Length: 276
Image (cartoon, rainbow, N blue to C red):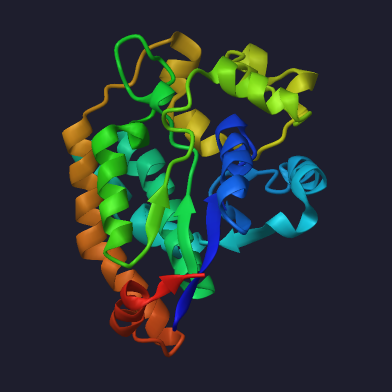
């Protein structure tokens, strides 16, 4: 390995954060791999983002993007459901399920990027959804310490973890930027309520991203009763550290053993290599 490709993988749902991330990343990298994950747990409409993928290719060039649906059911199972009862009791439902799910996508993107010899991977993490008293729809995976640690973990594999819209600004600013290109804004990305009365309308089916039923069920009190989720940054980071140390490192090692690749040697070569 002499050179690493100046290409990046993006965890792509099709919502405003990942969609704007794609727009920003294509300016810096030769190609963006738009990867959508099949996690196998109450998620539907994995191809709903195809309309915006088509528009991205039309606007910026068909050679700028590659789109893939990646099966990470086994990875998600190892991180979440195998220890779900214990994790629920220790960390709470949102961390045990939603953060675990997001972590499985993060590691899925890391593995994909290592296999494809890309220089990095990215997601739509954003400062606007960092948990706080005034932010009802915040999610724990956006905590600064969580992002920082995920970045450090990626670097330990000779990989960059990028969050291109983290400091971009408000959701309204993001929507305006995307509308300049004529990209479709998803129904829920317009910040409609997630209550049942707003979910069961004909507009909800005009989506540009998958439907995560399990996530809605985890957050039912927030969605129906406006009861905020209790978040803890240190506990969330502890959960991720635990999964990385006792589940993920072995999973990555064994994954590449099956491919007849020594991950330690691969990482060593990556750290010595140059980007194209």
